[in-house]
Length: 308
Image (cartoon, rainbow, N blue to C red):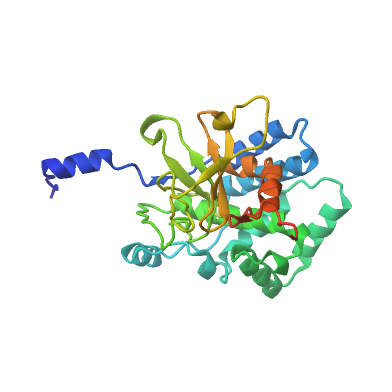
């Protein structure tokens, strides 16, 4: 039976912004291409190309995923009924399905001939199931100090491949906001960055990008995603002769109320902008904000944060 909307409800429905913006199926290819492009002349060029290679391997795993037990459709439906993330990372990371994606990634990744990379891959391949699980639990819960720094990008890439594939393979997902503005409605992980979109029905809207599954969800602008304050927010960017401060493609929304910040990618100023690559190529901005006493709460699973 069709639902008949009253005039006021029709207007509300028409003006409500779309809550979700799911990532494309070629997400990892796009990330790899963007990282390769941004690597030219960048101080971290070798590292960016390393991550680009990992992204290409992620795309191969996504396109030809391992044979694993299908996700539990009843659990997904129950989670959606109770407004819980259906692919809750803190639960599924303690199960075994994701490890098949990591194994597939390690098989397909073409590693550069660098001792540190070779050693990291050997460590992951030789680790016990219990050790891999412990590292993965620590990584998705933000306890980077419990994971050897050299392993973080490779382990993070395997986890991202699994969760992104699950997200885009599930039929009829109906995700709802989490307990926190910065919490992914798909897997419960924290946002990595925000993207200000510039086209169609998403024009001018802010979407946060999940650090794990790459789901994007709408959060109103000019509001701290951590403490929800709108007072005194400032927008800082790196000094760059190519861009005026209010036209920089990457800016940090700084909140004086909770002393935190979140990076934002403005697609109007860089149509090819992408959250993960933008974050990795703007680490100088993080260093500047750290010197000013602001704390970063947004993880990037491709990079272990340095000690303060």
